[in-house]
Image 1 (cartoon, one colour):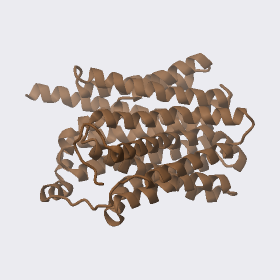
Image 2: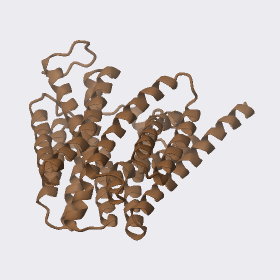
Image 3: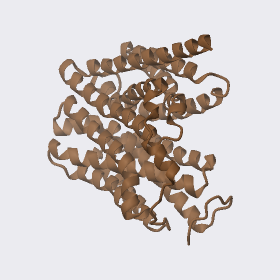
Image 4: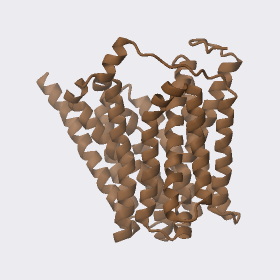
Length: 399
């Protein structure tokens, strides 16, 4: 039975496809946060420094970035269903590989595989849900809500596992099994193995380099590079920082990481609401100022409650930067798949580079020094957002 695009009431096959994608995004949310939650235990057991930990996180981010591009290409050659079955299984295989690894060097491949799984599931699930629901925003919002649920649960599950005397390996075994169920679920759906052909207009859009003449593209790409770098570094290192500096226990730090993600969801809803009334360049500047202030306060604070308040404030102001920065470059991105792919690649590079730099600096100057480096990235994000806002005034005065 073929998928009927554009129906309001889904048939049995369509519902099964949607539910499989929802579950896959739930697993993706877990994938995104679980590493940061168990990182202190992993570093201790393998006796590896912050620099090596940062390198592992960067390999996962690299796999995520690579899969975001390769997912569509692979599905064009072997079919969409075959692609999502093979690539989604990388998540389960990666977590299992972490469990059985006996040396730090062997961890590189499992980290990379979980990145491949996350990136491909994100790419293909977004595409599938968009097509099955005919672009219905309700179903796309539900999809990303499941990601948030998984992201919220992951640190709590890690905290529970350790508090009950289980090791981080137990947590990853459970997640590996849940990830394998994702692949099994996809195998029971009727996702078609069809190759999508592009129209002549789409091919022209893919090859167009006009976006390179647009200053909004460069400013938005710069903001996204530092934003993704800051977000990935915070998600990956905050539990380790709070635990190693003695500010709070690993269990409490993991719970704070969970709450951070809930605040990010509310922050995105708030930005979506005010974006109808407030200029996007103003939102970017205000968000970057707020994020920088709360991050600097977080670094200099020693009180648990002050730190919790700063983390929540940081999450709230970071929340709307990614979608707003993409919107800021909308004129450059419109009709150009190459432009979108390029700006997402630049953003992804931030997620690869910043966690590694944080780890390297932390190994030399201590974990506090590593987290200060993240503050420098937040400062550069603010600087670019400020320049972006000045261009708005310049455009208005010249008009």
